[in-house]
Image (tube, rainbow, N blue to C red):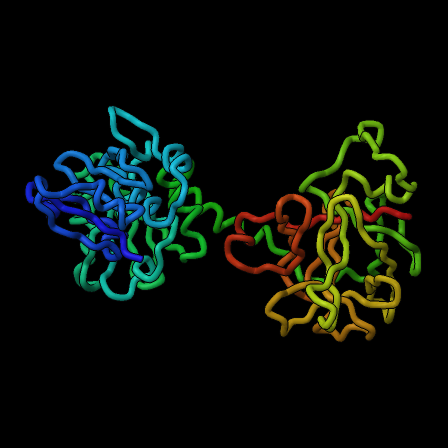
Amino acid sequence: MELNIFVPEYVDTTTLDKCFLDKDANFIPIQSEAFLPEEKLKTLDKFIVLEKDHFKVFFYCSKPYECNYQSRNAIMYETKYGYYRTKFEYKFPIENGLRLVKQPPMHYFVRSGNSDTLLYNNATEANTIVEYFDSDDDMDLARFVEAVKSKPHCVQKYFIVNRGNEYRAVETDNVKNTYVFSSRLKYRIVSTLASGEATIETFVEEDKNLENKLAKPERLSGFKLRDSEGNVVSDGEIFALQILGNQDGYESDKELQFPQNLTKKMRMFYGKDWVDIIAFRDSYPNNFLFGHLDSGVTFTCETIDDIVYLKHKDKYLYNDPKSEFKHINFGNCVPTKEQRIQIHYNDDGNIMLTAWGGRVYAACNWVKGSCGSITFDDIEEQLRWGSPMSLRIVRI
């Protein structure tokens, strides 16, 4: 669906900052004296009318929002994809009589033709202005700096260059200070650079520390499963796995207000996060782990040829290296070397899990706070900013 933008005869669109959404907009010349917005609203729910020093957004209502050109792309984005006037009004407060995003837009310079930003209308690029260049030979950082400094209404400290799938943040006052990143990282990087919460040095330092966040693949000799107190968990001994770090529960059960009719076991689980089991559908060949608030399942371990395997009842936990989902599954057979789960100890004595010889810890990503997807997720943002799942062994 194209966004209709009506352009009176007295507005020169060549003087406006370019926006990403211009490529999906239909600019329609009008004669201002003959144009009647109320008539257009009979056939169009939303449209924009440009003025010399501001623009008007008609959003399911004949009374328009008067808006600042500084935030034109962000406002166009919400007009095109949004549905609620209350959300529009919340996102764009009034300042000096006009609605805008209070944070200045980030200036992008985009290689025409195949750049990632041209393929999708992404929220990362909502609060932006853009200029295009034809080829790498036209990528003139000095010229880009001049363009940014000529537009004091945009972010002045940094700008973004997008070529193909590559993004590059550049410091305006020192173009040698750059940081290259992928589209998977761009929302966090661009938004925090724009807000001033981070600098290029922030992400350079994160790169240096990334190695420390990965598991060491070496296996401990004579490995024994132990609880956080250092006590050995014997083969066949029953325990549950409490997930730490999301909603660590309460300091003690005394703080809990238990619902009536809870059994002793249910009271143990109540108010904390636990490892549970789920299957998407009955025909799914293997169940897999997930996180659950207030309830979980029990586990045991079994040692075979000095390898400790985690089990639920008579099934072994295993990793399927060929699966795109990267879950921790259950199966009847002793896992092969490629399928094994490796157990690591935290400094606090609790455990974390990886694939055998793997470097990516299992993580639990919570959905609406009550259900967590447990995977060996190696996407860039998870490795950089996510937290590995830490498990406490709780004897039953």
